[in-house]
Length: 104
Image (tube, rainbow, N blue to C red; front, side, top):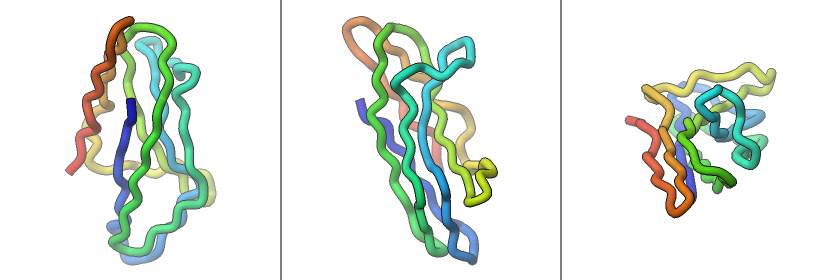
């Protein structure tokens, strides 16, 4: 399975992101081992886009939330606009169903 989301700099100044990533959390809110994927040092000029892709590994069946994140150079989390809810992923012993992130 590949999870993908796109970030766009809608501001008027260049933007440097120290860390961009995706993680899955279980129903208990804990990070699911093997699902944290990150990329460092992303630079976006005004209007530029960056597509992040990851292949999280799930070792058990269950229902998980996929959560994108981004941190600025001071490691302050940045809000990701237009994500109304986390994507829900249901993993069974025989197959996986991925519902893409809600973006505009």
